[in-house]
Amino acid sequence: MTVLVVIPTFNEASNIETVVSRVMTQPIDGLHMLVVDDSSPDGTAEIVRRLQTRHANLHLIVREGTRGLGRAYVRGFEFALKQGFDLIFEMDADGSHNPDDLPRFLELMDRYDLVIGSRYVEGGGISDWPMGRMLLSRGANLYARAVTTLPIHDCTSGFKCFRQAVLAAFDLPTISANGYAFQIEVHFLAHRCGFRISEIPIVFTDREEGSSKMNLRIMREAVVMPWRLVWQRIAGRLPLTRHRPGEDGRSCTP
Image (cartoon, rainbow, N blue to C red; front, side, top):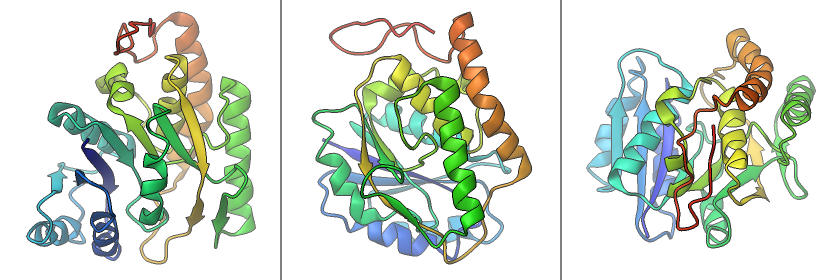
């Protein structure tokens, strides 16, 4: 079994070496890591190239310009499918997600198709966030769940593991969300296809270095996306392939 950890970066020079080292030393057979960098002016890609001399399974894609979080993940997922990886993680580059949790996800992947690291289940939490940001995150999750009826506690979590079949069910080029709403969109699509989804508790730790990418445009997209997904479902225009991959051949109707 092969495992790929996809990490998007933009100006993460102060964090990327630590994250790469901690991921690549996990006791996981067949582990690879892919950094998708948006031409960071701080030299993030150069650091990754240097680290590639130490880690044969470390991969790098550098995209021209700043294209956003969602498109970075889509590019990473396309790479994963083309290379035939069995399990695909996504996680942040800033140290907010603990690489030591990676084996915990894998323990559940024989029973589930998508395992989400959740801040909002028993045992999960957030460290070092101001109260205002915590309330905003809680409110955003309650809002997304109410509009989409998703049975997921942490709709905006960016720490998760997919089976290859889940990503193959998505029409990746037409996924529209590009900020944190991307997480809501992929969770909705996976649920719509009937994939088996579980959550495990994680503790999210605020970054110590660098700056958050949150802005007004990203927040606006997160407000609109749940309603867009509901409309796309009703109109039969969800970004899905026509059939769920797998032996059962169950429909994955857009």
